[in-house]
Structures are given as C-alpha cells and as structure tokens.
Amino acid sequence: MEEMGLFDAMYHCRAMRKLDTKPVPEELLVKLIDAANQAPSGSNMQSGRWIIVRDAGVKQQLAELNRKGVEAYIGPMIDNPGSLPHHDQAKRLRMMQSVIWQMEHLHEIPALIIACMDFGVKVDAATMAMGGGSIWPGIQNLLLAARGLGLGAAPTTLALGDRAAVSEVLKLPESMGAYSLIPVGYPLGKFGPVSRKPVSEILRFDTWS
Ligand SMILES: Cc1cc2nc3c(=O)[nH]c(=O)nc-3n(C[C@H](O)[C@H](O)[C@H](O)COP(=O)(O)O)c2cc1C
Image (cartoon, rainbow, N blue to C red; front, side, top):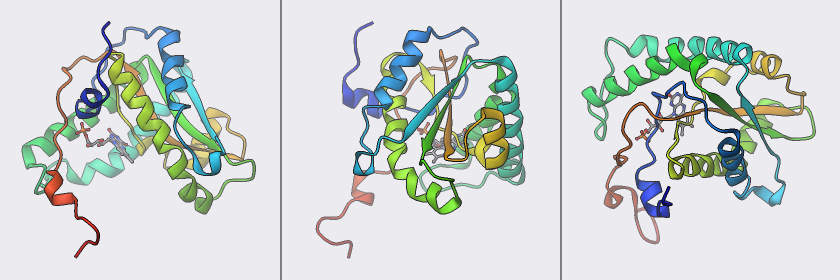
C-alpha cells in the first residue's frame, strides 16, 4: 500500500467506530505501538505502557465497563442530542448512533488497545491528571499510524471511569493507570475528512484580546 502523506493523514483521521471482525495481523498492531512509542513525554520519562487486548474474555469485560460508561454519558442525551455551533443536531445524532454501535460490538472488535502510564508509585487522581500530557501524544501517533495503514481506530475513555474495575480486568499494578481504550480494526465505513472549526476562529497572534 502506498504511504499516505502526513498532512493527508491528519486531515482524514476521523474517529472510526464501526469496525470489521476480520483479525488485524499482529505485526501491524505492534507497528502501531512502535509509532505511539516515538511520541514525546514530559522529562523524557517514557512511562507510557500499552496493552493489546485480543482475548475474548478480557474484551467482554471491557465491553461491559464501556456499556456502563456509555449508558451513563449518552443515556440522558439520546432523545435530545442538542447541537453545537460547529456540530448540528443531525451530526450529533449520527455520532451517538456510532458510539452505541461501538458499545454493542466492542467485544467483537479484533483489538482493543489500552494506553496506560506506569508512574512507579501508587497512582491517585492527581497523578493521573498530571500524566495525561505524556500519554496523549502517543495516542495521537497511534491514531495517525492506524490511518496511514488503512486501519480504523478511535480514542475512547468511557470504559475507564471505574479505575479499580479497570485495574482488576487488566491486572494492572497499583503504579499503573489506563487513559484510553482504542478499538482497532478494518473499517466498515468510509474514511473521510475531519470537520473542524475554521482556524480563524481558534487562532490569535501574540495575545488573545
Ligand atoms: C479525550 C477524548 C475522549 C474521548 N472519548 C470517547 C469515548 O469514550 N467514546 C467514543 O466513542 N469516542 C470518544 N472520543 C472521540 C471523540 O468523540 C471524537 O474524537 C470527536 O467526536 C471528533 O470526531 P471526528 O474526529 O470523527 O471528527 C474521545 C476523544 C477524546 C479526544
């Protein structure tokens, strides 16, 4: 497959939630983690840790945690998805429908990649909050690498709200915390461009006002 240009990948890296059950070769999954591992981290601590979940039992348990998170988050909105200036009601409804599709099918998706940090000491909420800046660059690298390889992926967090339950399912030591669950597989839908606010709205030079 011809490699995609970097900017092309960035501008076409939509959250791809509807994924085929067709297995993804292990070498491609490892390649995603290798790409994630090239990202920067605060003080070059390199505390990111990655778990590729393919086991049916572990996937099922994560799917149950995700269901709880999605139902709590989306339940109140499903009859009234609201709208944002940059995201109208029809688009929000489509997004919610794909989150629900993902909730129903998460256990069937070939690989669930869990982005974690290992802080070397017992994790608490403050440590988790501080650590985010050192794992999300890796997650974005992974998403771009997946896009470049023609794989679908999406960053998710709703499965991970109950930290104790997540630690138990993934057998994490008390020094580790999970930040994102990224389902990866071959896309069922079509890749397309992302839709974002115009740069004129989000950029100022020198000072904000
Ligand atoms: C911090 C963060 C948390 C997210 N959590 C979830 C999630 O739990 N479930 C989900 O389906 N998508 C989740 N997303 C994906 C966003 O909904 C998605 O990136 C956004 O709607 C833009 O979608 P697009 O890139 O397809 O335009 C999350 C994204 C980020 C950055």
